[in-house]
Image (cartoon, rainbow, N blue to C red; front, top):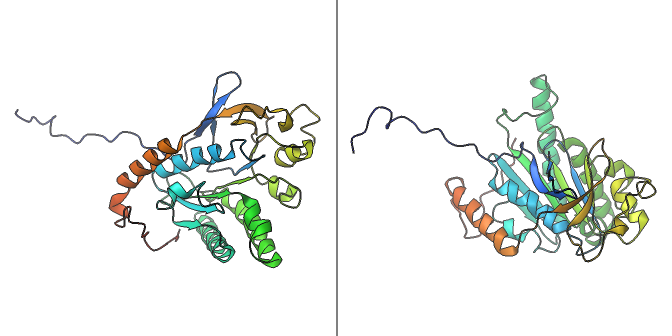
Length: 288
């Protein structure tokens, strides 16, 4: 075949996935798709074990693994909920409070540096056109680091640092996605909860727990996660900023599907990660 000028012309690359795009999380009770703008919001999920919190976290994590210019920092006290992504993450924190504190401190340093950069740019938030990576922090079971590991002082320090990260991360492309099966006022005070623009209440064991996730008095107004049937995992009352809770069925990924996505993500990221799948991640460089 003879090549013509048009045959030899550059082929435009198709659109790629970006964390600045809305993330698909499921469908509502009317069958309409539900998307969340994760980058400029934080997401809090709470509810009893088996309610479907990990499914929501996996939707976000799988999107982040495939999104361009995106990095992940993962906290997983059980190791297996987010363990599939450990070789794709800049940091994977397991059952280690000292490591957890070190990582959060560094995240706060990065966030502070980004705000200094924004000040120099005379702007208030990071834009998709900026040459900055999105750093998604995902915490599975917040209670492990706030009430179980380490000393009381370390637990309180972790909770304080996380509050700072949730407060700062929203405008500098460092969103926080956190989940707990123990929603309580000492774990999620209103000052922390209100920093999460998105709140997802999976089935809860009490009206109080439902309100701790969604906000005060929502149960009295008819939005009570206790009413979610235990035979309906993945059903959640989802509250977005300025709205009212809506009943959503989150998308579910099997372990096999998750690892297929992870394998593909590792393959497409290989040029920037020579360690590949041998478990030796590159040195962690979280410079903004």
